[in-house]
Length: 295
Image (cartoon, rainbow, N blue to C red; front, side, top):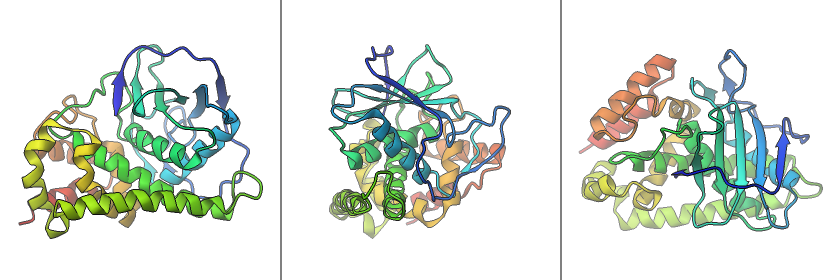
């Protein structure tokens, strides 16, 4: 969830470009830009305390999760940051920090314990999903009634990344003799998925996504956070895991002034047009439109 405010004071700062670890995951398919900087290779900075964790270790996990989230995904947005900063801080929720002093830096805040790599990867993955959806610049304040869609998609984006991260960790762990930690990542992800599955069943999502949306619409229109969108997360996850081209379409989100502050029909139309402008596949907004319209 993006959060407005002034830059925080920092006590520890780490800048890394190209972490020296094996990365067998396939690279994202980046479209060349004038600077050749994309979400995949933007310089990573770490700020904050990080508890008892070595910042370099935290950076290694973040780099692995970044590559997992972008595996086989075309990077098509024309609003990709030049730099990616991740801060560990106290607070109640991870967030995107909407700041003005470094306008080309996407700034993510996480809240994690010592060497809690599962939680770090998960929190980073969700907020990185917002960055991928072009929700990192100063004007990216969340807006209802369609903010819940981005929240559900960012969560699904992270869950997809966790699955790929676990596979990669097993093949080539970032730390010596640590391949078994892949099981911890899988168990962590499965616990999240189980929770979302329970919510979906309670809200009768399996009976029909359109019917679920109609029953939840008044609440979704007013409460755009992840908590209100829990019932939709697994539907979004199925779409993203089914085709990397649908993940690529996230890069076309929010490229219009109204962002998510428009009715659903307009939101999907703006998204489809944005996909056309970027030569993105356009499969995800089209499929969502079908799901919303299903009887």
